[in-house]
Length: 388
Ligand SMILES: Nc1nc2c(ncn2[C@@H]2O[C@H](COP(=O)(O)OP(=O)(O)OP(=O)(O)O)[C@@H](O)[C@H]2O)c(=O)[nH]1
Ligand SMILES: [Mg+2]
Ligand SMILES: [Zn+2]
Image (tube, rainbow, N blue to C red; front, side, top):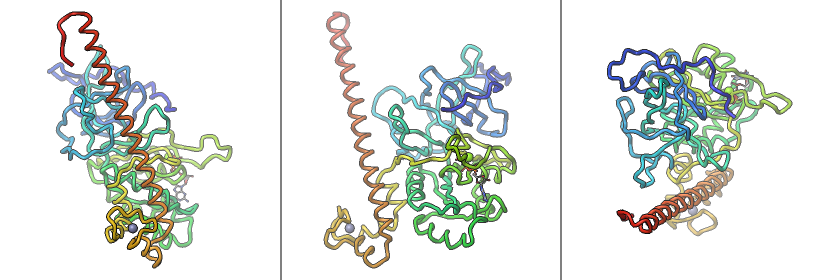
C-alpha cells in the first residue's frame, strides 16, 4: 500500500566525525516516515534536518532498547499490547511507527536501525487486516487532534470513537471542527459536538479564511508532537499546511470516480518552524477500536459519572432497578444516542480484549510446546540436558 521511499533519500552513512565508531549518526532520531524495509529519520534535536534513510532488519522490526535522554520518563502505562511486556525473556521487537524515537547503527556501510526507544504514548488502531492485529498510527505524540468537518454535518459517533482511541493513546485529545466558512452557524454546531467531547477542548477553524487557527497554534510548543486523525476530506492536510505556513502536504477533493478517495496515502511527520511536529494521517474509515474501560470512561465521562449512582455496581444500564443512567435518559439529561454509542464501543472493547487474551494464550501455548520439543530433543540426543 505504502509507496516506496523517495529514491533520493540518503542511504550512505554521513560523515559526522564521530570518533567512537559506534555509529555514524549518533543521538536519538525520530521516524518521519515508516516503510516495510526502511525508515526516514531526522535527528530528534533537529527535526527540520534533511531526512536520512535507515534500513530495518529483514523482519521489518526493531528491538526495544532502554530509554535514553530526551525520551521522557516511562510512566509504565500500558499503551497497547505492543508496548506491554509479554513476560518472555527476549527483548520485544516492534514495528517502528511514525513519531518513534530510534537509535541508528552502521551495518556494512549502511545506516541501520539499531533499536527503538520505549513509547511514552502510542495512537493504536485495530489492524485493517488479520496479519497485523494492531497498528500504531503514531508514537510519541503529545496531542491527538480529532479533526471533523462542519460541512457535511459532523458525525458525533465518529468523534466519540476517535476520542476513545485518543484517550487510550496516553496523549491529550483535542477536537478541531473544520470548514467553518461553509456553514451559517459554526458555533451552534460546535456546541452540539461539545456535548460528545466531554472534558476535551474544542476549536472551530477555517483554513480557508484563517479563522480560529490561533488556539490550535498555541498547542504547538517547541518539542510538541501533534497527530491529526479524522475522516478523509476533513481538511487534515489543509490544516497541516496552514499551520506549517507552506504547502507541505497535498490536499484535494474526493474524486467522484471513487478512486484515490484518500488524498493522503501515508502517515508522515512534518516539522514546524517553531520546533513542534505534526503527524498527518490518511483519512480513517470505520477505524477499529483499541480501547479499554479506562479510555471509555474518559471519553464517556458523563455516562461513567451517572453509572456511579446506579444501585448495582455492575449495572449494565439495561433495565436494572435503580439505574441512574436509564433515569438520566428518561429525564432527557442523557441523549439515548450517546448511551447507544457507549454500549457499542464497550461491546467492541470487550470483544477486542477477549481476542487479545486468546492470542496471548495461543502464543504462550506455542512457547511452552517449543520448549518441550527442545527438551525431548535434548534428552534423545543424550547431550548435556538443560532443564526447560
Ligand atoms: N472551504 C473550506 N474548504 C476546506 C477547508 N479545509 C479543507 N478544505 C478543503 O477540503 C478538501 C479536503 O481537504 P484535505 O486537507 O485534503 O483533507 P484530508 O483530511 O487531508 O483528506 P485525506 O488526506 O483524504 O484524509 C480540500 O479541497 C480542501 O481545500 C476549510 O477550512 N474551508
Ligand atoms: Mg490529507
Ligand atoms: Zn445503570
